[in-house]
Amino acid sequence: MLGTRESIAKKIAWISVWSNILLTIGKMVIGWFAHSDAVFADGIHSAADVFASVIVLLVIKIANKPADKEHPYGHGKAEVIVSGIVGILLFLVAIYIVYEGIAGFFHPIETPNMLAMWVAIFSFIFKDFLYRSSMKVAKANNSKAIEAIALDHKADIVASFAAAAGVLLSILGDKLGLDILLYGDKVASIFVAILIFKISKEMLSEAFNILLERNIDVETLQDFVSIISEFQEVKRIDKIRARDHGHYILVDLRISIDHDKTIKEGHDLSHEIKHSLMSKYDNIQEVLIHLNPYYSQEEKQD
Image (cartoon, rainbow, N blue to C red):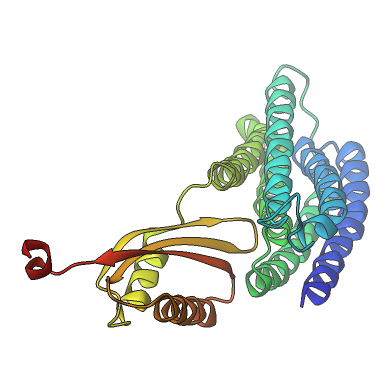
């Protein structure tokens, strides 16, 4: 299972590396010679994607290692760290693109070549395909690393669309004699940066919350409670918490059962609850259950 998951993640990462290398060269070269800041900025983003994909390749093997003595909870958070690094990288790229876009307003405007728009459109179509396929694999394998690659592709989709629109506006401005439209390419490059910043913020926020071991979403946690409550032997759920550990979840549970139950009965019940949770949620790696004695009101009065 782990071997398959690791090989799939590597395949997605390598596809991302080679596609982004080609797009980086194409967009930066054509963006430069076709005088399009937006397409050139999009090329810089693709270059960052290459770096991000290489990081994922380096960490995938670590993230899929089983738990050991030094890391009893496994190595899943390695993927979360990758997601955070990619988020930081995208944030820095966004700042650079904004700086270059604003600086462009203070230099003579050169109308972009139509070729720049066609390159941006090709990038948009190609990245949309990569995003959909990568996100499908990420969800199927519950992989934060592959999801980070998919979100990178998503940033490229919106960036390429904005770049194509910016180039088109600049060309129309030149043809129609509307000077204000000549700045379309510059504005598009800044818009690209804003979109990249938004995605980087989402990635950093998720990585930060997982590293701080925030509880999983309320809906999933409530579903856990519903599953546990189906066991009549459980008199009360005293405490439940679950934390995301990358591509798997760790659950901590405290329940009360009748005080006169034997150790074996308590053990068997814990095993059944654990099996029930893990059979429904295949991303649960471990369920730790603590048993408390339960006394009815009459027994307490006695």
